[in-house]
Length: 315
Ligand code: THF
Image (cartoon, rainbow, N blue to C red; front, side):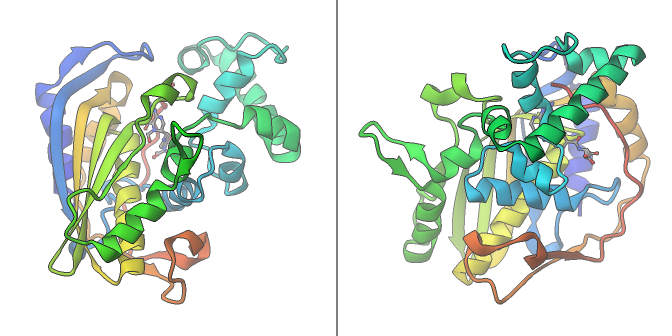
């Protein structure tokens, strides 16, 4: 079940160090934490609050496509990366609307500002969707996950399709201890909207089962981690499906595991709830390649979660 996640929440609430952070929000934080999910026991989408699986799946397909522009996400009604692109837009020369400096914090503290912000964000989304030139310039997050997964730049001017190579190696060399994909490319970090939180992952094959371990340098326990667990569980299932393997364990190792101070009330509410049975994942058996999956080929059954719990995202 999801007890590994709930245990981590309790552990950080009880033992977390009060630590300031880049976003100015403040966190309770521990360094180094590991969870394990046996994917044969159900799909690890939390039931103690509703986690929007459609958003998890469309974000993963976006990574797999090698896309780094939020336009695809908006076309799938997925708003989880908007703030990072919006930041580039409002800090650009071309932007002439009201000052949006520190919009993340100010939109929570100042109702009048929040109205302006919501209005600017709506206009921004409209333009990304309807204006291709604008989208190419301001929908772009830089060389983030999709780019590093599919088109890692080499010193000789070529590129490496890490994901394709990884899947190939799982097939031809399943005992390998080098089944690794890294998104951490020091040269490109300064150009990214946000340096990758999911820094590196490794696959492992034993007993006909495919397992995955993720090293996540930084984890937002309330908002991000539930997404991240589901996302890597889905990736593991997709690759296992292509390689004719069963899904094994997902091992989630986190560096700075933190609860934002403005999420503590929400987490406390969540911890009071009784976990329910995990849902099951159904993949369209007619699709063979990881690269051919679309939203309609990915289905979740038996998901009956407690209601969603809203919380502001730190930018
Ligand atoms: N930054 C921070 N502070 N937290 C993160 O989780 C995070 N991400 C990505 C990049 N930077 C981050 C973005 N991923 C939500 C979920 C995942 C995100 C960002 C936001 C979120 O708000 N989820 C809501 C539902 C949102 C909706 O319905 O539109 C939720 O209740 O789960 C870590 O990958």
